[in-house]
Length: 273
Image 1: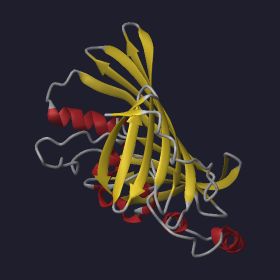
Image 2 (image 1 turned 180 degrees about the vertical axis):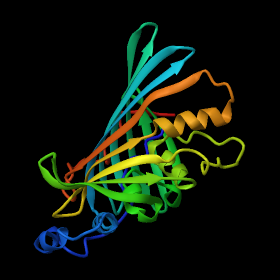
Image 3 (image 1 turned 90 degrees about the vertical axis):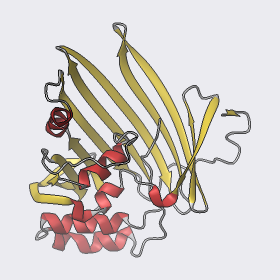
Image 4 (image 1 turned 90 degrees about the horizontal axis):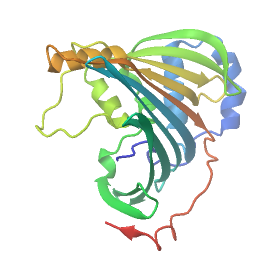
């Protein structure tokens, strides 16, 4: 299982959060949705650390039978050098009852490479390597501002997780969808070496709740139901598979003060494949 929810490498903040907080209240009254998105991208650009929780709920129907799966993951991420810890739990129906699969993944940067260690039993780890330049994560989706279209403010003031936020809705269309699928780990292996054309399919709706003081993201939801149903239809004309729900919710916290962990002695008692 590939765990992609980490943070890209970065350095120190150009401005302290206190400076941002002292200047933001007056500006917040007149900001447009696009301005909020741009300020969020800048605020997260130089992060040193953060924590994230992601929930993905999926209801899929095949030949009239509905199967519900749930994936929950928590991530602690540090940058420069990059290192992450992700604990993922997947609940999958099997033989009339739910089966839970727990996956633990650690990632650390070594030069321009990322070493990833993944275990499903907390005893044996699979080791894999990828180029740092090929890496993408959930935070990338809030930093790449030009991927959003049809931006609008849904609510000017709403409290989420104790933070005063602005709620913004956006659409993701065409080739930008491929990047989001990669960040969610839903792109799969492309065995034919070609990229899919998503331009004729329904866009993906994204909602963002942005802290009005710091401009950090507080929450993000992604609704992929319409897009995935049209995508399935484009692959198979008379598909007997459909989705009644594919929704992802991401919450962020502890920016620049994530819980510390060490990888130095972590694997000395574990076996590697």
